[in-house]
Length: 306
Image (cartoon, rainbow, N blue to C red; front, side, top):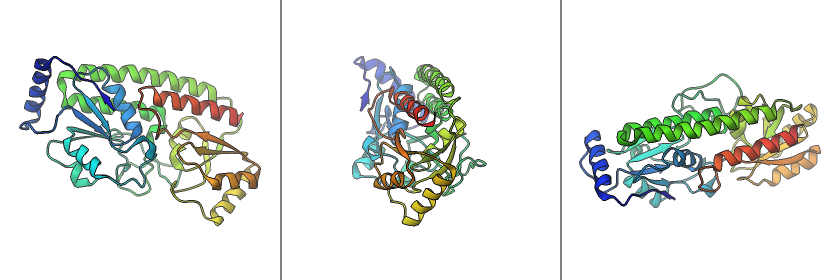
């Protein structure tokens, strides 16, 4: 966990007093400086935004080994963490279905939707007209896999924290600007590296790379599994094998968080090579984790699609 504390208690006390006065809340047993991030990519973004801000205690709800929290269930420890948090930072776009809606409406809790304003894709139609209704079951919540979207999420988090903690608003925004500049440099490098690849149609493990593909001019020709927790049926595999043979697709992209025996069988059937991509849903709790993972992804893609 990431914790930044200051030993100068009068300064901390003054900041807390100002925040409590702003929100109109009486002092609670929980610390208003505790920020809870719903799962891994949101945590990494918040880690960058809160860097160097005194008194911040940033926590992660779903463990980084859980992958995408499609089937994640809140634990009693999660409920306790949410109860003591002043701010809950979510990915949004329907990802946090595992959190009780009533808990997210707890008095005194500020919920920051990091995906606010981001155009959303449908899960079942990879690069089709966008949806903005996050309650729709077909919305694809993997918005962080677009670097452009990640920049928007970082700025949304910074603005949300600035509203809750105006005394440190300038620091949140400065941190966001610094991180967005690094993301922008990464994006430009990725565009250059993928601009000349010959094969632009890809087959992925599941729909998490739809935003990535859209951003970099790739097309997800097919996905192997609609649910990463369930193996595809024999009929699904046969249909996918037919698509790959017909389109002469020789690369199958799995994800580091989801090893799959079905992918091995499919690759043998069609004579394809398997490449592993990082969906940025698990990894080290470090500020550079997203940058590092996306950098590895572009190298894998360039090598596979040349």
